[in-house]
Each structure stands twice: as structure tokens, then as C-alpha cells.
Image 1 (cartoon, helix red, strand yellow):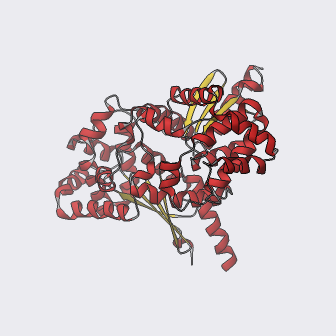
Image 2 (spheres, rainbow over the protein chains, first blue to last red):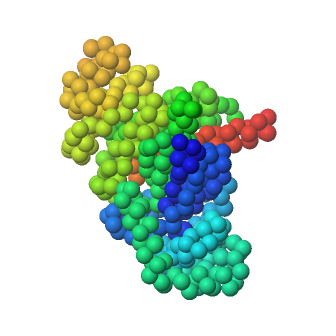
Image 3 (tube, each protein chain N blue to C red):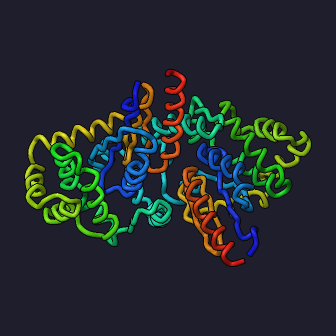
Length: 221
Length: 221
């Protein structure tokens, strides 16, 4: 078994701020940990519904805690997270369906752009309190990530195709099969074992699992 | 300001396995981090009720995830956590009122024994799947922690006194005032700031906050 056996999948939605934190940590450490990192754009609203879970912010003290938790974690991890002013409208009403379909289209046609476009969408909704539901918002994020206007418009046109819709559905169902009840979900395939980790706060555990895998690998060669 | 300004309070209940993980990490690092660690035995059922939160295990996928998460974290942190066989009966029916009142009495009269007795109660319920509700169970934990049978019986007699009942109520209310919606809650008082951290997975963040405090302190002297 070579390094490619160490595959880590990240299921995420740009509506989820903890997904952003997990995403940035994995982007930074993918070379250090020698992992094959695979991004899996998913649709969080469908995962919450399918699992019978409720957004944590519906418990008032959790919403209050999250505000401060994200501020502290953003500083610690140097991710410029800021709570949107009208949080409930952003999360519960506006949602992320178009944005996640767009990222699905990016992943199908220009996977090399997926990291940057995802980050620009997070920068909009979770840093600058900007919309991510309107076509012009999505195009602006794509162009900021380095796509040409033409390329971005071409992808945007594809978000209502069955191919894109079904792909997002399939990825979301794959997350559910792994037991997801929220996002991010990190699935680590190490030395024939599969570990499912929920949240952005299992990265030390992931490092531990990867290190143990690395030790095994060393013994086998 | 001296080191005593760096006070860390841990609100916990022995019914909460993540409280055990947080407790062990703090016990191990209290000298490394140069903190004044204060244990706050609390009653988790009252915190859940007061905050309108529900035990995570009521969402089936969360229960499934927790089983595996605790197994992995137990191995990583070398805490011998094992899920009780009849988890729902242990958590939702039997509860921890007597155990937490007993720990409150220990804290009032023999605070130097609190760490050990707490650990022995966790060893019973979260490692060996043993009862913690019956008087003989609590006495067995106390004796295993190094108390004499006489001392343990003396404390057990006090768990129905208004002093002990009120103290547990007050500590639980203090956790709620800090915004608790579950346990463990770690409250770090560093350089005039108070940070409230939920769960056992904010210990790296705590180290970060303490380090920043230490840096500030160095600049001031």
C-alpha cells in the first residue's frame, strides 16, 4: 500500500461555518499528513432532515455559544469568520442549494478550482455577510477565485441539469450513509479502516489516526 | 497579577463521558499550563432542562456516532471509556443525582479527595458498566478512591441535607449563568477575561487562550 491508501474525504456545505474551519485545517495539513484530500460538496439541509437533527442554533444558548466559539476559533485558526447579522434568515431561509449545486458543477468540470471557489463562497457568507443565493453573487465568488466570467456563467447554466442535481444528491446521500447528522464530516480511509469524524474539532484525532496508520505502514515495508 | 489569575473551572457530571475526557486532560495539563484548576460538580439533567436542550443520543445517528467517537477518543487520550450496555437506562432513567450530591459533599468537606472519587465514579459507570445510583455503589467508589468506610458513610449521610442539595443547585445554576446547555463546560479566567468553552474538544483552544494570556503577562512585567 502506498500513500494513496491514505484518502480523506471532506463532506461540507458553505452554509456551515464549522465546515469552513475543518476545510482550512485540512487544506493546510494535507501535505504535512501526506493525504489524498477529496472534497465532497454536500447539502446540509437534506442531511439535517434525513437524520432528524435540528440546527444547533435553535437552542438559544447554543446560538449564543456558537457566536463566541466561532470568534475564538476563527482567531485561533486565523480564519476570518464573522457571524452574519441576520443569521436565521441566512441559514434557515436563504439556504445554500444554488451555491452547492454550483460547487458540484465546478467539481465535475474544473475540480482544480473547487478549493478556491468554495473558499470565496465562505468569504462571502461567513466573513463579509454577503449573499450567496443570487446568480451574480455566485458569479462574483467564482471570478474572485480566478475563473473567467465566461467559464463561471457556463457552469452556472448547468446547475439545473439532472447531472449536477443528481450528483449533489448522491454526495449528500453518501454522507448520510456514513452516518452524517450535520457537517462537516471527515471520512478517513487509513490502512483498510474507515473512520468517520464529525465537526471541525476532530483534527487532532485525525492526525492521531493517520500517525498510527503511518507507523503500521512503516512496519510493513 | 500572579499565576492565580489563571483560574480554570470545570463544570462536570459523571454521567457525561465527554466530561470525563475533559477532566482527564485538565488534570494532566494543570501543571504544564500553570492553572488553578477548580472542579465544579454539577447536575447535567437540570442543565439540559433549563436550556431546552436534548441529550444528543436521542438522534439515532448521533447515538451511533457517539459510540464510535468515544471509542476513538478513549484510545487517543488513553482513558478506558466503554459504553454501558443499556445506555438509555443509565443516562435517562437512573441518572446521577445521588452521585453528584455525594461529590458535592466531598467537595465541601474533603476537596482534596474530589478528583479521585470523581474518577472512580466514572470508572464505574463509563468503564466497567457498574451502577452509580445505589448507596453501596457510591461507597465502593469512595473507598476505592482511598476514603475510609467510615468517612465515606459520613459523607453519604449528608447528601440529603439542605447544605449539600443547595450547593449542587447553586453550582448547576452557575453553569447555566455561564450559558451551559450540556457538560463539560470549562470556564477560563485569564488576564481579566472570561472564556466559556463547551465540550472536551476545546482543550487546544484553551491552551491557545492560556498561551496568549501568558504572553500578555510577560509583556506587562
